[in-house]
Amino acid sequence: MQHQHQIVIIGGGNAGISVAAQLLRKNKQLDISIIDPASKHYYQPAWTLVGSGVFDIQKTERNEADVLPEGVKWVKQKVTSMTPENNTLQLDNGDNVQYEYLIVAPGIQLNWHEIKGLKETLGKNNVCSNYSFEQAPYTFECIKNFKGGKAIFHNPQTPVKCGGAPHKIMYMAADYFRKHNLLDKANIQYWSGAAKLFAVPKYEKTLLKVCERAGIKLNFMVKMTEIDGPGKKAKFIGIGEDNKDKEYEVEFDMIHVTPPQSAPDFIKSSSLANAAGWVDVDKHTLQHVKFANIFSLGDSSGLPISKTGAAIRKQAPVVVENMLATINHLPLTGIYNGYTSCPLVTGYGKLVLAEFDYDNIPQETFPFDQSKERWSMYQMKRRVLPWLYWNKILPGKM
Image 1: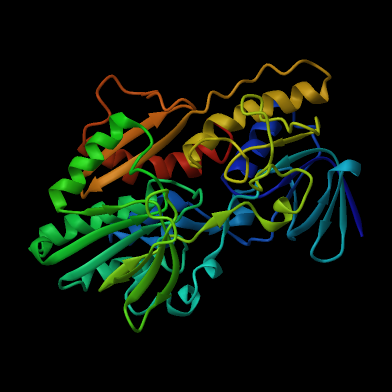
Image 2: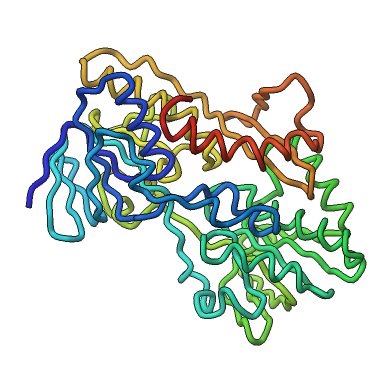
């Protein structure tokens, strides 16, 4: 079967839905189709709070049908391949989709299988992860039942969605241990594939103090290769200049694992991908560098910035403006400056609101120093941002 639409959006997550809603607010006559196989839609930024025991997982889930903008046609299938040379997508049920204009926003792919033994032990043996709806509640079980020993927190060597999440849960765990007089019995360690804790010095300075306060040992430029849940051991290999190929075996009493991540396979194997597999777009206009009728935003785009919902909020209006300009044969005037934000919870009732651009220069919203831990910012993340997401961002009102 052949589908044909003026605008096709791959992905019914934050990026796809907010762009569709904003496009229809500008022009209700547009013929828009969203392709996404998921029947549920998740507010993922709250999963750190779920894993910390302060947010109900059920409140992060809604039916996809209930959040899709009125007037959009939903194709509930998965894209398996793309032929941008003739404006065609292939779906997993054998159908083809023809488009005039394409917006690529399928999100990021979680590659659990890249760590040997992870899929088999996840959700038991004190091996947890906030990176899925099913697994996030188990993180708090592990934290709550911890009686002392080694608590390991892992960050992979790949880009990830919400770059702060792998260490945010570590700060929450440390604060929980402190509140329950277990901090002196805890050996907390961070094992990361990155070269440093945080890219922006202003905020990293505060985070390093948080680590010092909890006695957290930091290990950088390492890649997890294998995990043995029943044996309570994880294997890492060095990927830096100084530790290249060095092997580490790390014992744990609990471990939080962040899966390696990439663009979806159908993008990596297409002519849309850059050398690293992400959608190759101009970093300011978000238009594809080769195909002028294609735009991309969100986690699957090749933008050199932290992959966050806050980044999507600033990218969406740029895609909308430039897509409409392209349809009307006008010059592109929408410019994205690389804005992103990481609301970094550093403990219960404490948050550092990092906001910055492509050059890692802070772009702060409030008239105070956002690198300081604040109760007000924690309340904003816990109570205000989820409401804004469902009621303002997804409907295209901001």
